Length: 230
Image 1 (cartoon, helix red, strand yellow):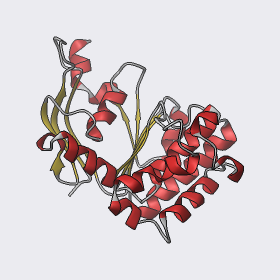
Image 2 (cartoon, one colour):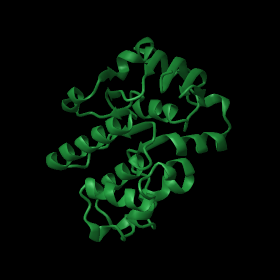
Image 3 (tube, one colour):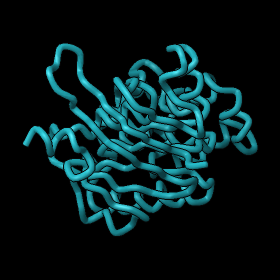
């Protein structure tokens, strides 16, 4: 069974006269990594929202580990996402008043399964991830709002990876990092996903990164709705 399975996916924004996305088929197996690229406004973030169950398809099927997101209510989607999906949002979505450590630990507080997969404890796993993303220990107790943009991005990555989720979704996660931090970040993200057998969907404008992934796709080529509109 693929971790991600898209069949005849259509998504139309409310009030729109045409589909924003029509993807006939896409599957990703466990442990595979996908680099997804395309210009701004082509629907990359919309597709990531559908993969994570934040958005629900207008028609067709988007399944995570055999479960169609559209068959679940809002609370059930939230619980399934917390258990199985780690997301690095383009805007980070950290809670500004919580400390760095508390932000990283959030998935473990929403999902007992994520917490149980942390060895030896969630706190120890959070500390290890923060070390791996090169965030100084002196910053761990600070509120997230006090961090630089690049530091917030690294905290968001640690939060996505904690508890070994089966699917990791990353939306432009290297945009605020310099070259050295970007290379370290990519090594960590790809290494952690391979070690845990997680499927990785990674969106970026930086096509130099594409060679590090198992598969590369252009969303404008994949999206038949976009081709029809053109």
